[in-house]
Image (tube, rainbow, N blue to C red):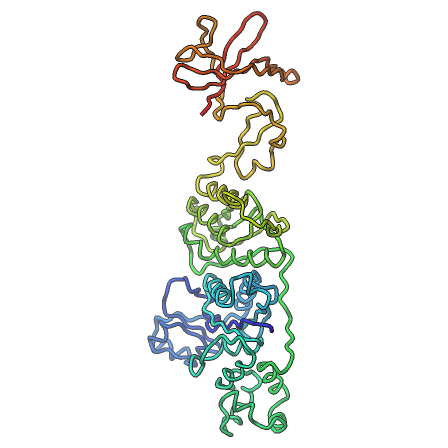
Length: 491
């Protein structure tokens, strides 16, 4: 049996101007000069739906009024749908400010019905929208449960079709779009709920209303098939958001940027892709006082698509950013993409964490400390230690390694290599560094570099001092002269 989640956004016309996380204040939205949506602060001042503009200004002049913006609402709906694609590829519009999601195949992946509902609700809140969710074996039934008022509703989640009818029967018939056109006639005959509507003779109901009303009833109760047009993710991702007010602090941008990240995560999952480079563009003043936008690029050590990890990196980078001017808009782009790798088929977890955990740690350190403060080895195929030993920023080192680790010399090497070899004194034909050094290994001969003018002819030894410290020293042969140098320190 299929299972659906219905999403109802009752305050969408208002929250496209004032997201949930925005500063509070009395606001209302007008349509044809009448209030059609308002927040609690405005309701506390006596503003009610249907009140004219003049009445609002006379009653509470401090209320901020907005004209309804249908284009902005559609843009917000598409952003919401893109974000929800991370939970299921089957998402469809179902009326104004209403969506349905077929989550039949997603329950096990997200920990069950309750956990999935919580995650969907959390995503909608992070985007800044108030939402009511319903769950039912039919798409229309789930949407009716989401739209229904608290009374006389018993529950918003029904899992079995045989129990759905009892829950839907008590809901007002006005939830069906086809029934609202005949509201006066239905109320006149004493019909107020979906259950009473179903008990009317079908032939007479169809003759006095429309065939569409019967079709909606049958689809809601699972007695007729449902067809939907699924939302298709665009081939390229680039999301834009206007900030509700000018922002002068980088960390305050995180709320809007989080909404863009959620859209990108939904798009990545729908396209089965992972991102390796993300760019956040912060737009400043336009017009005569235009300021060039601030670009923030985040390079990842390995492809990623998880919202929590990307948000943590963005938070660290924004915390270290100083803005040159107030920000009025954001744009997020996925610059570099790779196919999403399948999950590991290993039966047992890897000890010490997976490679993905290690790369996520590197990315977090780079975001917190800066790219030049976190280095990773990227050895070059050369026998000379000072040439072979190369360190690059951790996010780029994996792409520029000279050769695989198995091809490197399998000999003892110190962890600490000096930038420049240190000349040593020679006393009684032995190298001296604080105390006479005793050679504790056979020589390792290196003769290399004749092709680039930096020829090296050396014999390397492990040497031990009087305090049992181990050093990596070499003897340089230049004709009859022998010189000793300290090149590394062992732990």
